Image 1 (spheres, rainbow, N blue to C red):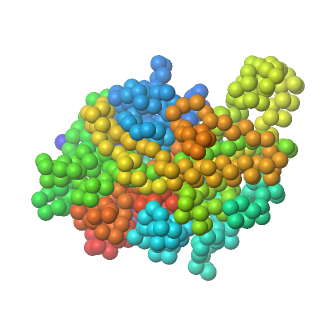
Image 2 (cartoon, rainbow, N blue to C red):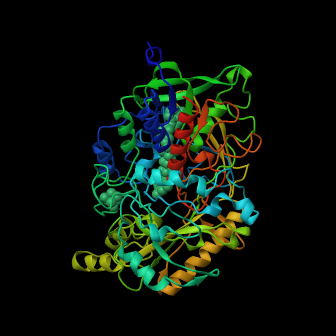
Image 3 (cartoon, helix red, strand yellow):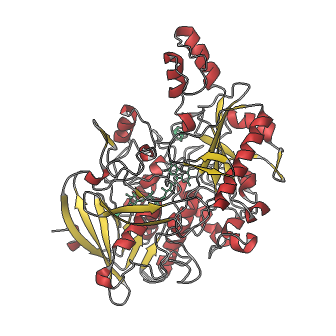
Length: 602
Ligand SMILES: Cc1cc2nc3c(=O)[nH]c(=O)nc-3n(C[C@H](O)[C@H](O)[C@H](O)COP(=O)(O)OP(=O)(O)OC[C@H]3O[C@@H](n4cnc5c(N)ncnc54)[C@H](O)[C@@H]3O)c2cc1C
Ligand code: SF4
């Protein structure tokens, strides 16, 4: 007998990431019976297995601690043999179109370079923790600058839920630092914890860069709001500062959705089914969603063990911005929804966005001692907004605290160069092979002066950048996502400005620049210059919210225009990617949607 025949639910949620977890928790607190279906493994009791996989892995990439295992003794596991495969940064090289290595069927001009997880707790297990609010003009780009598109909701309407989300996540921040570009707080509001202290790298950058003029603005280094504990909070420990936030915080000082999932379970009204892949959204003749069909499995590459369906009053898809549109597009309902569920606008799957990152790295003239503290503790937010947005993409600048780990995989790369006489890092031009005290001195000299800047560029929404269904399938026989991706001239102009900013900042610091374009497909040439880019993990925009059913898929409450008892949540509803990392806004919108669901009489 399938589980669906024995239990009755008020709400069914697909996906156990932060967006699903927040809504389940809120509904559970109000006595609603909630099922979360999760494609990945069930919620583990602790992070020990993740840590073991991380320790043993040679490629310590963001996805490596999590399940299903990315690699076996022969290399990358064929995604076609897995029941819940996902993309990995290990398939962004020449193998980006190889169906036996890459889960996504990429058919665009450029690779979509961000990844996600299929495991309870979702992609956020390997997030950095950056929890910025969007600036007010992020919501009004069309009205203010005549570019991109407006949101149907503004900063002031969302403000209350930003505060709730900051307390639910546990954000450490300094309110005064965050009051820029029109971001305002109620007078009696305080973040739950004080800011994480600035790193030594941040202090060295601020000493020279604060007040520097660029594009008509005076730059300022500001502390970054972080979903990690600066004090004991919510029964979790204080950050120990050992720079391992991506891919995993060993002590859970950094928030991840298991915190909220456990609170949801504690209400006694929420259950989570792991290893349960939603495979169809069934709509009846009146336009109501009646049930969600699912397939269950016991092991990552084993056979399906059960198929069933669950009914409820309300359905919430929280499977993130690639799997949610895939599920909607798969659900044809014997021709009643020929373009997929919730898709009368033909916008499901369209306007896929990211914050493509321009990464620039340099060596300071003096030691700045990265690798102490979290991966990033400050940024330059000055260029997130300005009149220049009429002509080019804005960006925020993240100051890295992990040397050249992001661009070249340090400290390992430089250390291997110094031991073996190589020069991959370009820090050992003489090709010396060192040992003993000479090696230690060379390592100290090289590693203590490294730092990098990450420019998170606001990508414009383009309907042609989209998720559709591939004819390639996973092990359950479900279609894999086909992704078409490119970068517009508006966004590329943001890269030009980012490079100009990096050059000016490094010059001001007296730093020697080492920025280079990594080999591989994630690069483009624009106005005579070749730029490499990285994915930020910010997957946005494939079922946008808007003011009516022809220009959007959901309304400002993230409710489907086509199906009144269906909610689509997560960053897929963002009409623009905006200039901050998305998850705080995802959480704020999820909490607001939970209130809307409860107010609708569930
Ligand atoms: C390396 C990295 C660093 C990041 N750092 C930051 C940061 O510092 N700040 C920030 O704001 N954001 C960051 N992000 C982005 C952040 O992780 C995401 O915004 C967030 O995880 C999205 O949450 P979600 O709940 O919408 O989706 P997810 O976390 O992806 O959860 C979706 C869940 O749905 C499940 N699912 C999918 N399909 C199905 C199906 N058919 N049936 C059942 N279940 C299904 C998946 O298994 C998954 O568990 C980062 C991302 C990456 C990759
Ligand atoms: S620095 Fe270490 S303890 Fe702090 S959040 Fe990152 S991984 Fe966790």
